[in-house]
Length: 293
Image 1 (cartoon, rainbow, N blue to C red):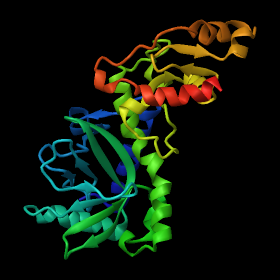
Image 2: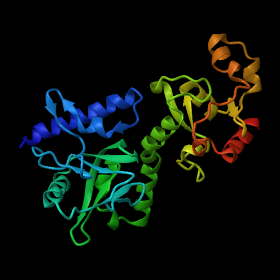
Image 3: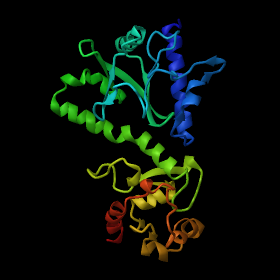
């Protein structure tokens, strides 16, 4: 059994690895790379092959939990801010280590399945409540919310604040991963393929009540085209044609403006292969009205 200090150091090293990967543009992780993870010469799987919880034998508390798109367990999203995670019936040691994570407030990783054997990572997450009667743990998806305590006891105004605080941040990893996959890690406008320079852009902003986090409300755009789209310097028609602001078309300001924006005027979007992933024409029409105005 590792000492608490060594266990904490290992958790920090794992978080740093996840940070580094995501800074380089990686937004999803495969089951194989998570299962075959190493820190130096130490093999330390981040997920378990056959269970939705990872309790390394040398850790005193749980390292990660996992839900799959085809998970047989009854784990479900409770709200945008909190996840309910059922006790395991067959493995009492799993429950014991998750209880320990609650007691010592150990930071965990929540791997959310987005396709078969593919996950996005939310971290650090914390167990904030343990209900032995209902046999369920409550896990907060935002570090700041663990100080609120058990969400079941929160006053309605605090609960609403917690949900608003987390909503946009929580769906971003899965939204980005799904959009990047749909567009094959390519900018829909200029075909740039450097994923570290690409964003998952919302057509209807996520702050809007209609800004749903589905692939059909997303576009894979490089950072310059994302910024231009958000500021209505660039528009996209419901028939997937790129338009550039008239004043910008007349401006003279070097090769970046010319090749990066002006030459995109009239170009047709590169669309996802699957029709069900393509941008919703009604959402594009709504945004295009703002651009045209």
